[in-house]
Image 1 (spheres, helix red, strand yellow):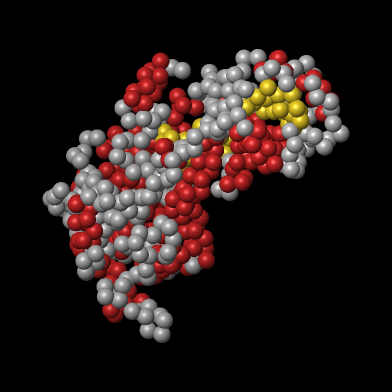
Image 2 (image 1 turned 45 degrees about the vertical axis):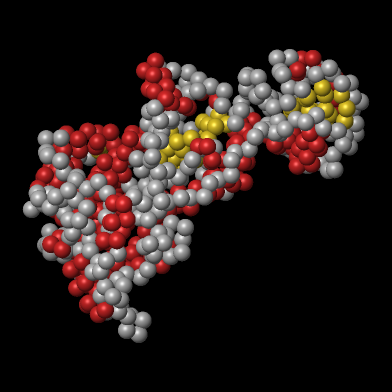
Length: 548
């Protein structure tokens, strides 16, 4: 390992451990979930550590699909705690700006993404890992079983997955091992019963399990080969051996029989992880956040500049830079989106200048890497005074960790853009902004589940048939309400801000349904007023100065 990386890695362990900043809210807790958070500084050194394999989940903490997968992944990782001698489990949050570079390097374009890294990477390039394209626990564990069984392990207490060979004896298999007992398990052709038994008993450090694919080899250990009725042999360090009766020929029955045998000697399995704690949101809801929630819940509804700033800040510095290469469709999507922002953004003078210059620079390019995009933005932004002043979500505040926030602010930004575009019909023909939004969501949005749903809606709701700016505003409103209806009651719903049909009757009485139909004319008036630049609230920003 590079000496500088070693120092960085050790400092990270000492001053906050791996890739999680103290007090930072995340989807996983190492002490309860058996998942260690890593970041751009700690992932590389961790992958090149020898002896254990690694399972890494790349996620976006704002992504609903990642949040829904979290309980499943926690169950898997807790179950695999018994594999700790050969497998460690990690996660990297690609929604954090410090992880943009590593997520780009690993080409993470959808989340959650599961990657497996072998233990034999010491001194080798780690590559991009092996994808496990599933969220099904059985499929994930089956894939991991295949992967970990391919490796050779050389630390005391680690397993040996290779079938017993004819030269091995009790003396040779116990050499350099401190286990009290050895179990030999017959594994017929096209079966994995021996491997499954071995993995199921890793939690007992006093037992080594070896796979036998030839019943005749039992004679090397002092027992007469059977016809197949007796398939498990137990041997102690003195070479005493015996067949172990089992209720049936399954890995579950073998594990059960061996557990009962070990407990006769008061051998206990690996101490399990503590039970998950009950979530306590009192620390999350500080006085400032409670004050913001109180403000936001007041009528009439408002749109906040702080949220629009947060959305633009994060997509410019986190979402877009995670792309490996902008070319072809991706470059066109980038150019369209930046062009819309350059003319329609709600930022201050310096913010507008940044996007005007960025639009000009990108307009003449045929290809640009994600790393080059970061350098370009940095070079254009540095000479300007601070642009992004918002530090908290306001209208998109949440009452629980990791809810609303970025995704909510994106919807606010998208609505704002459709309303602003209607003021410049010659510069932005109807549908132009929707095409830019669609290109961003399809090519750059980190939540793959959200992206897929939006693309499906665009086809089904015939986004391509939008002919007027009023239709453009209403199309996005209708799509947003469809998403709210789909997610109502979902685990990603904030109880303080339920997913309802928008707008509320009290917000726009004249928008209400007549014969189950919304009043389109009144809706357009309401949306134009709500998202108008002149009506944006400065609440939550340090100053209202400098936005002219």
